[in-house]
Length: 232
Length: 253
Image (cartoon, rainbow over all chains, first blue to last red; front, side, top):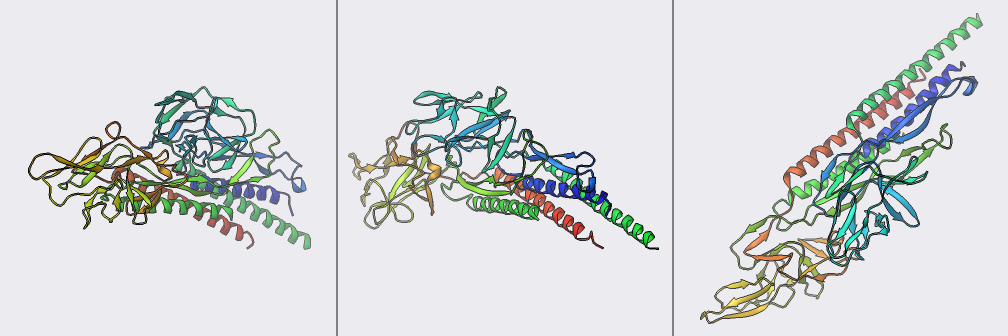
């Protein structure tokens, strides 16, 4: 076997993974606040792969920072973020990030996310009086109709993130406060999966996969010929 | 193979969304119907080994999408004029408090009331309206006051008889109410306890009116287009995954 078979195989494997990431992006094209993943490939140096082949691998899945469409909502608890950063929520003893602003007031008067986690302001969870209405301004300052200022929503980001499922993200590096954002009440941010881009990536992934197949077959053919000439 | 299943979750999600839209559109003329929307979230992620080193972004491959919840939107519908003195519409937040025969509390925004054979004020399904309001057999018209008091004008025109007061309640989290169908809702742990509403400030009750459905046909149709196209898009991914599999299988000629 020639080592170029392994080069072609690594390309096919990486593309296969890319297709899985693409499938997840497209499946979530209507998920509120979803961040599409983008695969980054890299090439290993010569001699590092099997039989010393050069191979393609996936380096990481980068979360797209593109803005999702803001869609108007009739719900007072729905918030959308424009710009950099995520809303922060308290899930057990860890802080999670989310762009999904489907918030509501729980039965005990706390502002919570769709999973019931308290939404964090810079001073902790936001507690409302019974029957109290609230407004949120562009800077994320929450004002109650009875209590007045209740705190400024904590909008943060991190360089390295991990998707935690349930529209939540976990910070793997230090949380940094965002200064470049706007909060829109009665709006929800749609998924940032770009359908056009997804289709192009899909075509690209399919064709690249085919090309890898051809390369494997071509290498196979060369081996076949070599075998034949050796046997004569 | 994972891509096939991931894409299938997406197709399922869009189907659920379409089901929801169909239900909303079917109720476009239902008195006091509150539209529902399906909310989705991404499924768990699988981590794949990478060459990126400890500082690089992780290689995470998601498993698709799932239905997170269906949310009911309690914003008001348009008020529709009627000719019945026992038709009431709530302007603002709140619910009419009703009672079943067993004495359990039910809540509804549908104020198309009538009287039963004993003259007691009931809703269209025969549930009693809270506040024990009885309408006398003979009267010269019914008047609803600003604070929700219902009064009957006497036949001889000498005055009026107070029949009782409509009881309205609000919930901290109305989205948490349990929908029972028939325009009825029940209190749940998520909704919190009912709080009695004082009429005349943010909430008013209008006599001779009914609240229409709050379904907005245009936005439902846009949702339908979105769902349909997203469905198509995911089906293309299924196709692509299938083709890739075929290509892989054909490696060995």
